[in-house]
Amino acid sequence: MLCLARETTRSIIIHHIEEWSVSKSNEESNLVVLCLMHHDEAHSTKQLSQNLTPERIKAAKDKWEKGSFSAGQKNT
Image 1 (cartoon, rainbow, N blue to C red):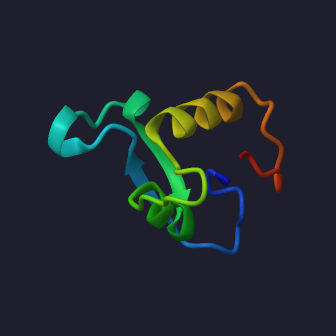
Image 2: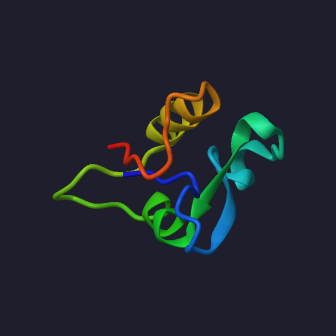
């Protein structure tokens, strides 16, 4: 699930899709706005549920940028 900071009541953070320590990139294409809950998920590994991987984040960001991600919609 990825909100891309559409929840206006949540605090947000800028997240590097590919870790900065690896990419050294602050390019817009490597950044996404996440609420703190989803940022925590992006840095966690789960064994019993789907992880918030860089590929899932990029796919959701692409949807959002194309306008096909409506407010309040959840992306899994």
